[in-house]
Image (cartoon, rainbow, N blue to C red; front, side, top):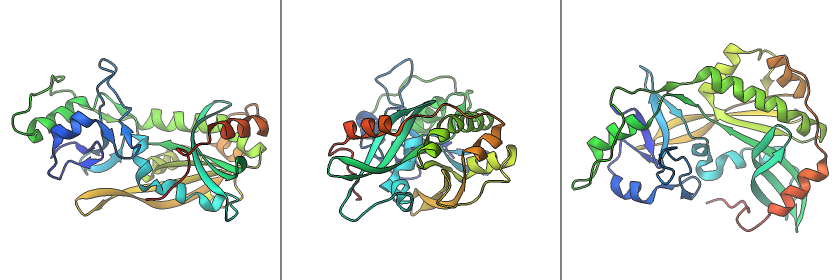
Length: 281
């Protein structure tokens, strides 16, 4: 059984025109060319969305954009947004805040004016070692007849899940950013796979992180990657929350500088367009 579960959004358990998928290099979740590329060949997209991990063949998402399936993660955050019927909803990517940038802002807009927003961070597992050899092993068995084999790294190369580094980096980045959101009375949502959140709970101080309360500034939404027909699909599994002090308690760190509301709103309003308009379907 292949270690690659999904390639360019297509399940490896299905019959597909893999050469056509390799030629297009399209991500169905971003609806554009896959932006995960090889460092040595930046024009070549890797395309691995999820893998089967360990003896249990646990499905693990390794690309954060895999979480954008059906835009469900945005719909599952709507209850945290002050949204008046008649307002438009926009999804604005990559807005800068202290400590880095936020993957997406879900924004309620009246005309051209932002009336409310929340931040959404996507986090999936980083890997140790390269996934490329496993990708090539799969393609060697599934490639369409008549296609030319691509160069590969030695078959002996294996990858693993980088649990410790992924978890620590995630919490540190959240701590840098949550201070801003709480100071502004806004919410930040971490969207991640259930298995990664469970690792956080086991290995860090998470006793104070309880079932979700909408009043909390820090929200955790966990998703399972479940079989559906011949494919896999994400499903909301649980919701938890805490405040900025709670995130700091996980790491024992102090607060970071805060950012003024006007700076965030100005960034959001400058990025609004038909492309950011949230549409379902």
